[in-house]
Length: 276
Length: 306
Image 1 (cartoon, rainbow over the protein chains, first blue to last red):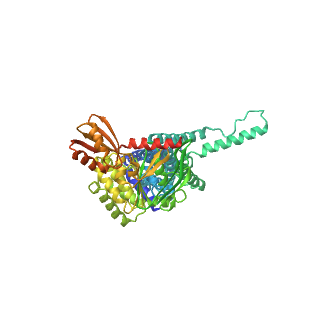
Image 2 (image 1 turned 120 degrees about the vertical axis):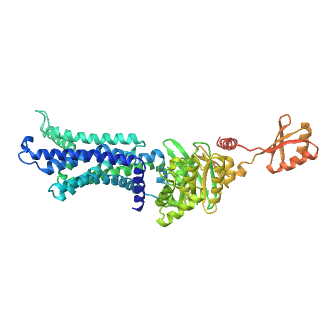
Image 3 (image 1 turned 120 degrees about the horizontal axis):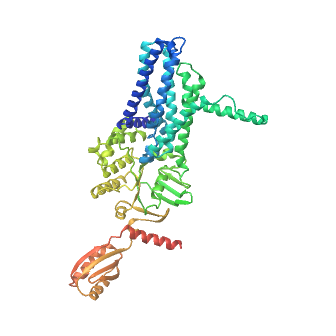
């Protein structure tokens, strides 16, 4: 624990002794602030004359403004997270400092926890900027504080999932650019998948006249593929939670997602022991 | 302090080290000598529990590197060859970080960082960003990093590479002083360095230890270079009377190469010639280069293998 904190602190400080931390935080604050302002104003326009926008009544605040804004903020992480995670382990390998880290009395899991912790601290700072925005909402709009807190939690869980995947990629690469590109590619794939999920028809397109067993097989396989495509993307589980609808499986999804990639990172770091 | 038994590290079919065995006692300074790719760094990385060996065993400070890596790491200060440092950090902050991950308490940390900075002559650089330091100072930061916490075993991979002559002298002295309370294993390319610092030398070649001895014994072929005026017959005659001269060759007119049993007989040589009224214009002990020694040891080794 103490060792993890030492690694975490050094990593976090180095983010801010180089421009990376400021650039990442500034860019995020700018984009999320702009999108907040735009969607908040648009929501105001919509609720002033709902019929113009095909709403029977004043549109639901959580559904029409809060959830899209928070999921959108989380999706900004898609672009920003690779910049935070790319250096975590790839730079240590590139600079050779990994040798120094691994010959000090640190356990692999302490190193990984420290690195991930530093990324989460950065995420927390970003969450603070989102919190400022939500503070304005809370001041002007009559909304349950719990909804806003769940909203923040959604953002954090989404970000944490992105960061864990990024950390894993960084542990496999020894070059920051490679790490960032691969991470971004995987994020983008997940982003595209959630669009495909909406396009996929509900039933299996099995040809007529095939034996029933084949039809059943195709139907089951198709269901499986379809549910994976629908459920796997990082933003798929955020929409409900960001409106204050709390589902245990959404939270479990995020925790498992992060845990899975932290586990892979651990394995990847360990692979030095048997790899050439 | 260090016991290595039949250590082998293979990358596929290639054996970086192959059946290396040696023992280093407490308080010894041992030099690891060998051409590039001989397996020095690989061995050191096994000893510092950076990567495991394919087979064989290694114990450092009483702990097996494979089964107790954390204890080994606690007892070893390691300066890797590439001197990896966090370039964006200040010297003092970096060393404090190292002290922290070595498990020193908050109060010990400041004291320990001051101690190693004084020992490596870094006091004036405490607030400097490592990126802006010269190679020599970076090397010292690396050494300071290894010294933090006074680990009983120090493993130094080419500690004097890239330093200027004055720094080399001071680092060598520092390492020599360390021998009082540390066991030191250092690798180097430089033969005089080994004879200056180490009491024992291990020569690695193609992943195997081909010689293990004191620097003096390894460098047992002594040669004097002599320049004298006068007839060569007379010179040869006089030299044959000196004890310890085993052979004389005249390389060019007035220049002789003497095979001797000991460098210190140069006094007798000069006395013998001067006493007979000859004019001595030059007399020096020939320094054998590392290359000569390697060729010598390795050809001996290959002769044995054949």
